[in-house]
Length: 360
Image (cartoon, rainbow, N blue to C red; front, side, top):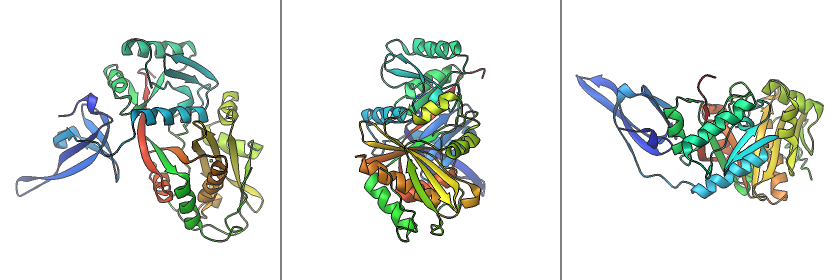
């Protein structure tokens, strides 16, 4: 059977799905093991998340991975994502990063355990808990998988909780631009062509990543030509109000997270003069990565393709600045957003789990 060391690896599970004429019926599932408890195991499959009671598991084993990114590639992308969402209060444990932003969003208030913490693993986890306790915050650790699987096993042994899996997804900018433009259709005016000189990221209460708040009809064709998307180097007060409504307020630390990036643009989507769509784009990782976050369309303007138009403008800006790939973070259970990103050309690079210290 499986062990905690298998979390983050590709497995196959044969499970009992019924009984026919006194004999069990089996079904096989293949995917990445993202959680293992005494009662259930959870897989990230091509069809979505699958939670299987241990009592239904007939057989399970690790299988060779499909082509997956190297550890170095995961580290590089995680550091680029950290640059794109910079916490104002920071510390280090060797290579590990400690981050705090007055509790605003999970990623800006969690440790990132990549590299060598310059001490034994158990001592490193103890140090993380002390650092956050001194700030009066709960200790959170984001564990990229399978890179940080040993950290996850240590946290399991200590009884740390687990938030829902987050997908870190990527796409080459040329493919993304083509897909977005093809699916929008229409003329440049219809697309609101206004290029300027956009997981997480996380709700302050739940820690869930920023997955564009898009309804299931986000794939509808672009709406009327009255809509226009503009990019700005700073967010407007209206933009910030939408972000505050979504994230439960905007403390001063939040403004730092949003704006303290050398290359950043804020997308403003207007319809009939009213701001109805927003998005944020950053270029980090030595200029390679365009990070997309806070993509949101207000309910009154959904089903008009505005999410794609916001993304397309940010892609154009990122490409003009030399970025070659885009990344975003989306909670796996957000099926509408995952489906939209898949249609645009995003694929999962790796996953991560946010772990929560017990007693919180």
